[in-house]
Length: 308
Figure (tube, rainbow, N blue to C red):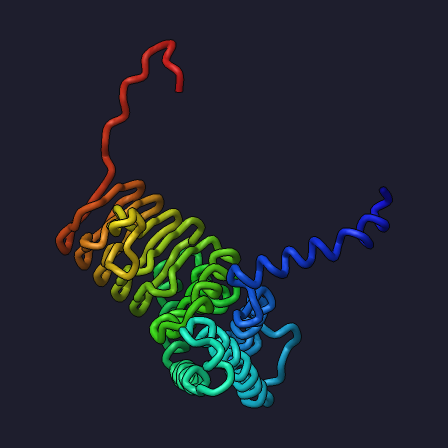
């Protein structure tokens, strides 16, 4: 059968099947859907344009117009974000039909969350300034701060994380995780939006870094590529499913350096302040402050004929 003939006859059956499946499995008209993913990316672009005017625009902007452009970006992002949050909240509501027609609770909550995020933009900008300073002071290859802002994956990932974290704190569904995975896709740095990160944080190189949901990271912490701050094991419920919402990931106190390839696991694991963790170390227990941990196992003697 010719393709066009088959499409004319059978395509309605396929589209109907997909429609029925999606209606019953999450992607229905009450969720943000796939189009919402691009909307979230657009919101991120506008908010980061407001934080760093001129960096994320397609064309140069005049200094005299910065206030106007920044205000417009914030206004447009806020309106878009409020609608996305409201849709997500309605989808989580036990009585979706009532939430859509009679109740204004989801709309009111979306308004409040959006306003709080906008109010926190100056604080977020200050934190990102300190992150840039940490990169400049911590990387001898950094010739100027503008270079860090324009090219370092660490700042790219953190500018998204610090926005997503605010929404996570408000228990907004879906949106913060879409934001964090967008940063992951762009930078290779995977920071869950729930992770709490202090001031002057720097990820050098960045690729392959994983920071788990319940991590708490202090001030003036520096980590290198390939570092994992993850979960040691998962507590299971009576059905054998992982229990959610419990502390699973380590804490890293102030003034800690963690070198490349290191894995630190466990919700009860604490890296004490002013410690240095060497490269390729595996840690599942706490270390006290001012500790140096290195992987210094001797290499085995290689005999003639051994395969490497």
